[in-house]
Length: 105
Image 1 (tube, rainbow, N blue to C red):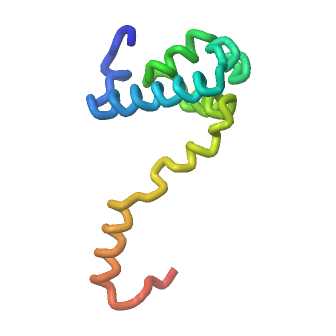
Image 2: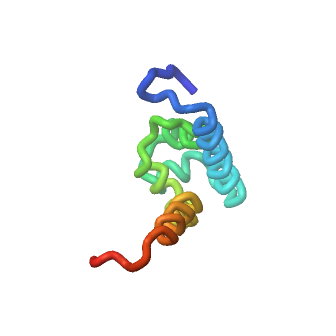
């Protein structure tokens, strides 16, 4: 993936998640029978950047990931990030059990 600095180094689990996202983007491109050059052109980025996305590079800006998803007609997939928030809902439920009435908002 190139040189890694403290600023670009991710925890192992996040690196694996980025690698999986890159692989999923690559598979979406191949299913559509598109070349890297075609996706890069549609996403207005370089082929090198598109290749780095497919490798799961954490240094590529999220906006470029979004443009690649848009080029693959997968732009709505971004809406699934943090959609469920199981931990947040559990914490909210615990807090509600301890309260006797709603806040004054």
